[in-house]
Length: 487
Image (cartoon, rainbow, N blue to C red; front, side):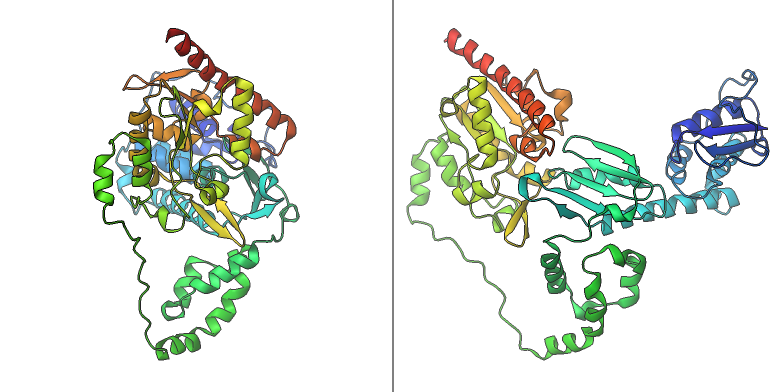
């Protein structure tokens, strides 16, 4: 009997390595027992255990299985079924002699693995839908924490979604099995905790309940479909759960009142009055003039972000600047002032530029996205990360600014800025610290956004990352000095 111990409940690589070695040695599924390190040992299990079969490989050097099986096994192994490791090895064993086995949907092993994978994916979807973050702390020191109880081992599978969706805020998702944490750069995992470790409420929940009640449409209510999509077991972790029962009970009465009311005129968007001679004025201005671009961008409707933002926040600085600093998007203060980097992040940038030896008055400062993207939370507008479509829609302004300024170096601060400048999603840590040649002959430098430094809760980490940020800007300062000497 071969006793295989895996490192964790989700140790797919360990299972795959052991399963391959067992199969190459013709070890039958009935001769293998599987367990996870730290779990209760099986009855009569020997003290010493091995991840490798005791004998050398058989003459059969290798074997192939469909790529679909590997994809299926990676998901199914996250199921809580304690027999999943044995089931997957049995299916692997059978695939060696029947390569098309996965096409037989009625086969008991195939059907069970497919059902397990489907359950894992459904649980992943529920986690995406029903995680509710609660704010701990305020503003720059805030951290967002959520509690979730998954049916299966899906935290590692689901975490990248939250890293993309909430990339601009530090968060933690606590579960009984494992906890996921995001610091703006990477997802890390720690052991699970009790529910008592999670926050119970925050100052934004009443706002969220008001919003939920306002978007609830009683005329389209389908209770059975609603409960199927949002099972009751998730309600206890949702701020809006207290509203669901009374909203359902009053739905018929509310819908009747809506029908009885007279129809209202649709809201007519106000059109901005244009001066009669604006087109002539624009034609007289140089196409590459920054002021002309700023005036043209004020009416930008390339994406939906203009609808909620106060105004377009265009770049500013010397049109002959040798360095162009590109941020991600305007924040709350910038949206109100109409100027880039005038809020806390701008103050952090000014300080770092001074330490690096760069005069901000001699550089051009702009953002990849020109409108403030946010979600309202009471009196606070929470910054939201622009998506790829919004970045692409706004890239025309960056390209035209670039053509007008003609800088020698573009400093991309943050992932959104890096995506706009380089034309692709670009990890910051792997690309910072060195110059990158662009297709048009301009060089680029990638670094973090100064707002990232403001969000770091640990003082030592904040000091360390600030020094790295200044070192990146010193590279830009060196480019500027060499350019001035050459001139």
